[in-house]
Image (cartoon, rainbow, N blue to C red; front, side, top):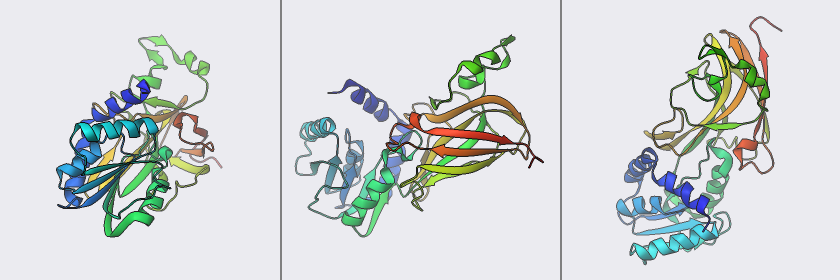
Length: 295
């Protein structure tokens, strides 16, 4: 068993906010006797929650062979044989013996869409969701926002930190995405803009997109932050920004040379996503500042 995989799932299972949100969502949509599909089932926490709320049968779909084998062991160990069926394979191509009242998944990456959840759910639900059935999450939106760090992360490389000049270090850092868990809330310098939205399919085949971030308050621009907001069911949402204790998702950060900004300034962005966009630190961002009043 890949030990990194086990450690990743260990962290995911320890994310109480994540599990509580799914618990609340499934309590609203799983009715006694419901048939549920858990897509990307992993170590089966969503399967367990579906059973808790009255599902009579859960089909746990898992593409990773090692995790599928682990899932089969968990089904046996928990006495779920007959109530939970492990289906090993890609959800986009597996053959299922039933249609479902509820399809649930948690295939959100640090930025949101890099695990291809929207496309996977679209294909699977089109084939197997019963009329009137429910998909959880209902919507996944990825945002980009201009931020000024507090004294952590990329924010420490500034003039005056510890009465030192550390800003010279900025020029040594190669342009590239970072993943960051905020321990102190940064200052958001302008309204976030939507990069992808599963409701309109904007992230399904995205490879490049141009956007503009408008600065709404004076400050020092440190980075562009990327994060997601998932609506599981109406009234129940889950986001990785701001970071919370135990959060298993980092915030995607594209550092920029620290730059003083004022209301009315704009950051022109172009997002570049490689063909295999699953590794989110390979995503690229080209940034250009346009000062208020400049043409």
